[in-house]
Length: 133
Image (cartoon, rainbow, N blue to C red; front, top):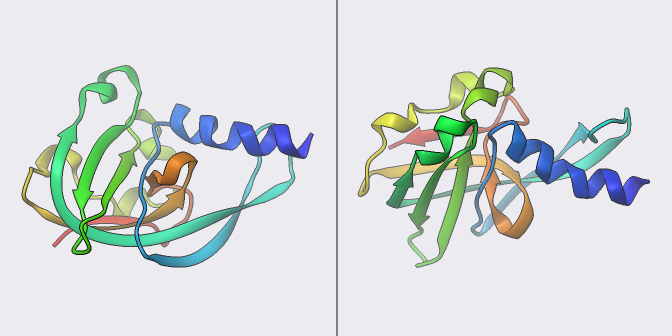
C-alpha cells in the first residue's frame, strides 16, 4: 500500500498544478502526507538557478502546471512546474513569482520538491520559492 501511495504522490502534485526541476543542490527532505492516507512520505527538496530557456503556460488554462525550463551555469536543463489552480493551496504560494511575467532570458532561482524525472515543484513547503533575480 505504501508503494501505491508513493506512486500517487507525483500525480497528486501534478493534479494540483504543481511540478519540476533538477540541479546540484539537495537542500532537505520534507515529509508530506501521501494521497488518501495519514502516512507521511519523504519528499526531496532542491534549489537551482539559471537562465529561462522556455516558458509554456498553455497547461494552466486546463488546471495544469505552467512549465518553465532553465539552463543552469553548468549547462544542465531543469524543469520547473508551477501550479495553476492549485497554487492557492500551496504552502509556498506567497513565495512564487508571477509566472506570466517570466520571460525567456530571465534569471530565476527555485527551491521545490523533486518529483518524477527530476521535475521541481515549488509548492509543498513554506520554504519553497520561485524568484526572478
